[in-house]
Length: 84
Image (cartoon, rainbow, N blue to C red; front, side, top):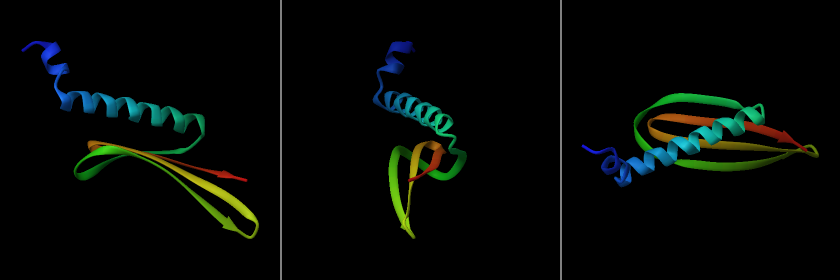
């Protein structure tokens, strides 16, 4: 089996792309001093999620950011909060 054949398969390209996204999420987490969670999941999931949620409480505004990358049975989650 030739390596170029293996790399030309769409499934392999998806996994490589998700590993790159997961690495970028971890770098973003370190830069923002975020909570980084790497955990196993039950089942098999492929995808990525980016979310921000703004909370307003007694004239205080805070935004919580969530980055999540799911690669098979591994979940990489990055969470941080910005006040103001």
